[in-house]
Length: 279
Image (tube, rainbow, N blue to C red):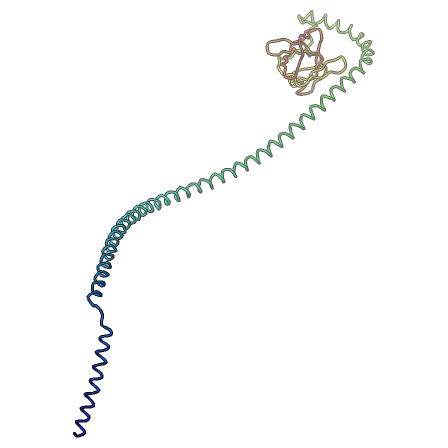
């Protein structure tokens, strides 16, 4: 046997050992592939059933999602419509707000003008009140002066008695003049100084000085009223009494009430009327 033959024999022995090892390996790993196939098929069927269930659940979810999507889209369309309506409404509200702002500015301007006018009127009223107060004070002062004048007149009454003696001398002359007037068809008893046009006024003040009650009336010398004239006092149609004028000013006069004719309490605001005194 040559070298090649030995080599071939050696190779055959090695191959036999290799194949024997493979056979042993295959044998040791041999299993029941049919049982494995049945188990695999059962698992496959189970997985397929799970897949079908999952597919059905998927289809159901997909249907629900489609329905929800359609509902959402409808809601979106509704909200879009509402948004458009709200935008239009907002535009209208903004226009109305601008108009209200303009009206508010106009009213504020009107209020400011009214306030300025009120301030002006308040100043005018304040001035008029001051003027009225000053006039009232001046009238009260004049009334006090008239009362003082009346006191002075009472004091001079004594002096008047002295003058009466002098008047007696004049009386004789008056008698001669009266005779002359009668001869000419005139009434010597009519005093021209007491002739005046009838005039009306009101009682502006009532004062009491001791037992004497005095009144101030709103007619005076400018109306022809003189000391010695008498005025009648009325309230409506009721007659209250008579007063004799003791002093006058252009638009005022002081009178002394005659108790003989007094028929009621005389107050400020009562009406007075002049009368023609013939004696």
